[in-house]
Length: 113
Image (cartoon, rainbow, N blue to C red; front, side, top):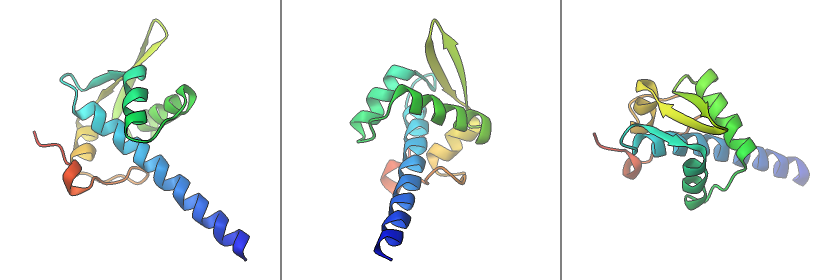
């Protein structure tokens, strides 16, 4: 029984961390002048927010945000991935739109225009 509760807790924690990383990516992009950031900037910023992840994991999250959530687009220039926020992504970062799989912002995280 204890093992099952542990497994459920770990699964919920993983789901929250995933949704947190996705939200932070959107928030980082929303704070950039051109709503864009390259992979290295995103990795550095996520690490500063306590979510150090690998390049592979970042690519997977960017792909999910692009294809599943449709909140950003990605391009690759000379092996450097660059993400650009779209209007729907800005709405999610600002808390005016909610999407499953991306946590909603806390009141102090909402970026004012």
